[in-house]
Length: 149
Image (tube, rainbow, N blue to C red; front, side, top):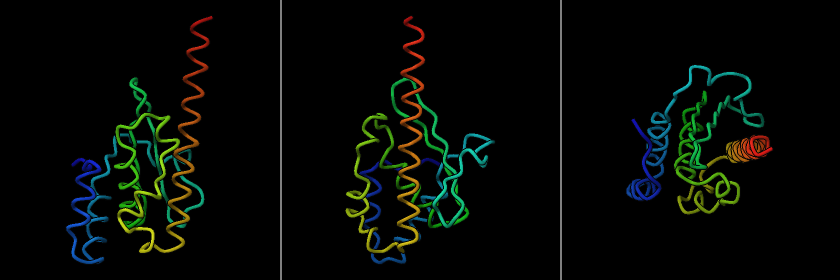
């Protein structure tokens, strides 16, 4: 199973006739998150600041994009993570750093339908992703500089 593209996400989300259907779709998306690594559930991949347990692993690709893997013990949170991954999919790391996820969550009307606790958890996930990408970018830059010396 693979996650849909952004346009398909919005189309499918708008086809849902009520919030019960939207929550079921969010849960379905969470089930489609790819888990490639056997070591995803390591403490180094755990996101702090979430009420649920959340693990995210980011692997850089040579083209400047990244591969996301994730999991949560909450099916709704896992679905929300899937939505974040869909929004960030195929973006350059520099674009991920500046993209306003809030815009997309508003476009899907998620902001007013998720609890404040989940909203804080999503913010923690986004901060963690940006922190990881900043770290990856810094390491790549330092590695490139060391090769050029």
